[in-house]
Length: 128
Image (cartoon, rainbow, N blue to C red; front, side, top):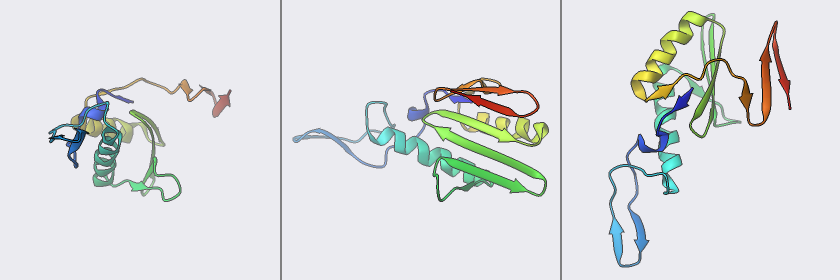
């Protein structure tokens, strides 16, 4: 899943100063600001936790959800989400939730990620 304009989804928490004599108080985050990526990630994490996900302590970009037999894993890289699940019907509901929270594009089955080629057969095969 790809989030359109991810860095423009949240409000800024801090004032931004570009000149010692000028301070701007922006209402929305912007791509060129170093705070923008943090604002976006905080908002995404809040939405995932609201859905029931738990953020990993060893990798803050990994979120997991376990409800009985249902298991969903979300890995966040900038404005892209890799979602793994064991139940396709639950995936459709979760994607609808994300779509209601953010303007998203479903890129389909994962094929490439960070220089790794991913193929699916009886299992998952990674090739660099």
